[in-house]
Length: 172
Image (cartoon, rainbow, N blue to C red; front, side, top):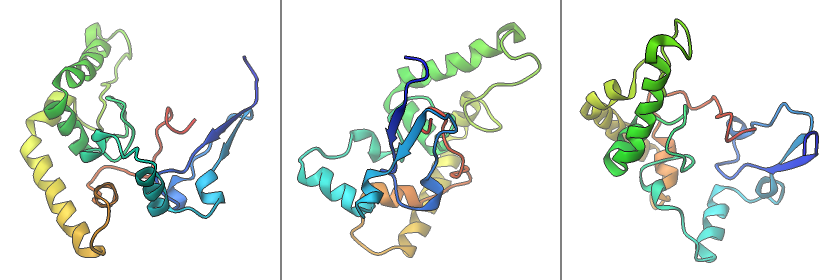
């Protein structure tokens, strides 16, 4: 229904200002039920655990949504996708290649999922990316208190990827 009013629940990743992306569309109102009730990230994790739901398996190697292709995935997450779901990784590569076919889709531009390189180029650098990610995890571990959830540690292990821009699909 075009023009209908919608409310979008948001804010499950954290309570910091970097995660307050809201829609610019006048008919979409973002609500932050956890934040409004004073529930932080640890509280969300506790709710999920106590409900017996648990986090999806992809959070073992990802910090964001379970979509197999997203412009805002970190390079390490693209490597993880290739290792764990090569078929989905190949589909993402196909999208890059389709756009480059005869330069018909985006004239004069090189479309890639990851800033500055194609997915095949990124995968060629797998060892370098994994080494940088591991170093980032180790640095983050020194800054944090023990016994934090793995997802929280992974979220803190920022590499050179920009974590400030929001995904248009995730953050309508």
